[in-house]
Image 1 (cartoon, helix red, strand yellow):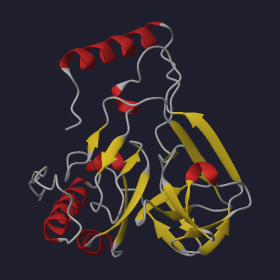
Image 2 (cartoon, rainbow, N blue to C red):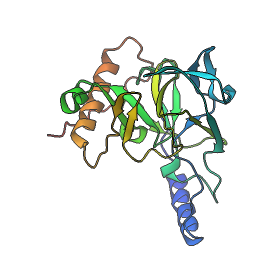
Image 3 (cartoon, rainbow, N blue to C red):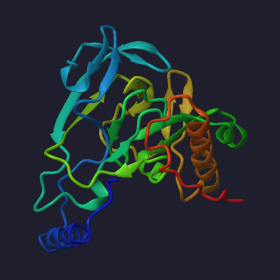
Amino acid sequence: MLDFITNDFQSHHEDEALQSALGGANSGVMSGIVAGTKVATIHGWQRVEDIKVGDAVLTFDNGLRPVRAIRRQPLWNGIGKCPGQFRPLHVPAGVLGNREAMIVLPHQGLVVESDAAEAALGDPFAMVRAEELEGVCGIERVSHLASVEVFVIQFDENEIVFTAHGALCVCAAAGDLISQLFETNGGQDYRLLSSDFDAGVIADIRCEIIEAWLDGEDRCEDAEIVYDMPRVA
């Protein structure tokens, strides 16, 4: 549904080569909340672009917490078209507990409930990058988007917020990049799963999402866009 056209894919590689030739400095962002996404606040569901510093946002672990800073920037402002690795993913409604379809960035941390994670890590809630779920139940890269604005919401501590009427997104206190362990958060520890070290757990989580999607009552019309990923021993 959202696959790249061959010529478009080729042009992306040419743009990346041009970036490399000019010094290799990509000017883009890979985590944060995309404009238009609704976030749970003290006033109900609000679009992320309408949230202001000082507003109280509902968090998963610590209830209502005030926003301390907001960073607003374009998804890509480099030379040429947005390279493939920066392109966000479309998540159909119902796949990750989201009642609305949503757009997420590749490195955005998502928290999912998982029996496999509880068995392997002792905690039923696991954090994965969105890109680790690509290909599951219609989660696919968006090939063509108009200019996209990204909002990085910061709190006093790392927090998990409710988005798109149900999905759990990580807002790291340090800002944009979620490339390390998600450390102590109000007494609750979350570790970012990595395909380098946690491939088996991630594969099982993918399978669980597929099973829940097929069994759930919130399936949308394109539910047939599913493939089964073999479990890793």
